[in-house]
Image (cartoon, rainbow, N blue to C red; front, side, top):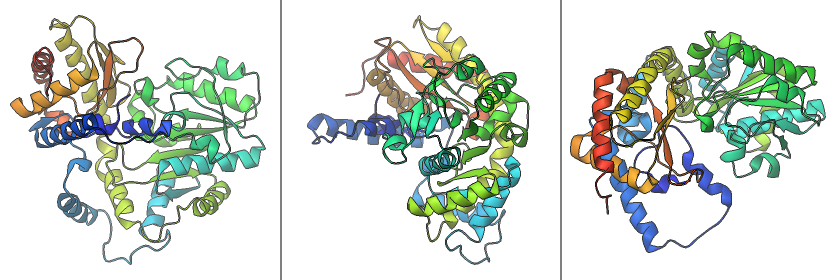
Length: 416
């Protein structure tokens, strides 16, 4: 996989570069790494200045723009004459109540990061159940992006029901040979292509876990955009789990932060462990305010983004079929959320170069997230596509034309 230091633009999908940190190795910067850094700066600049993109997250703004935007938007959703929060009161506590209400849970606790949030809540469940084994997918966030903290910091033991790039089935959960205390489901499963089970499959797999005497936890970092696929409101989806983690900086475009919602007594325990993990921060109002802004502005629009992502994905597939590329993959063909993968038969470096050239020459950044090579099959690279407000103005014809233009850049020499 490539790291963010090798990417062409802003990674609108999240922590793809974190995977590079899991090796734990430290190397001395080389001349080639300096070249990669220059390419990174050039790529980010090209994507940031592109006139047409499918998503324009707040992370691409300057500091001044972000501060001005937050001040303006926060005034519309919260009383800014209120006292500044101190150790989780005020606006942070109000955000926690809002999340608990949205998810239909008794209580919710704010955390500075999702990594901390999930380790804490699963650790609390392990103490309650007396079993530190957690069933989770090998492509899930704790396994890919957290430098083995799941085991090394929190003493949790991962159990894998399947290695296939899909959600586990009820039969696989029932058939596990060893006991486990919790089932963690990442909804959607990002590294499999933002895949979700059907509603009946989700009900079945949670029932299977409870038959085994386990609790159910949802890694719902992107749960906000799952309502369209399931055809159910957030509260009904969350009701299938004992606890739910949600993120504020991904789909909601907040500054940072996460929350865990569940039974009040358990959430009180997570607050104690949050302190022990170093997550009791004196003031968090910027993150809390931006989360409230996201809940007010972005959450209602996510179904629209999902619907348009399906049009974009179909148009991309049509565009690639019309070119001379031959093989390609849009996964899934019909996106389950407003994010999906694109696979192409080229080296990541070649595709990154094409992204830069297209953005600089035409002002169009069709792809914004890093391209990386999974290694199997060889000679294949993939990227992630996010469709949000900026992408709503794209017609299928616009997408097909952008694909054709992108392929033209792929077929020319890469940036040097």
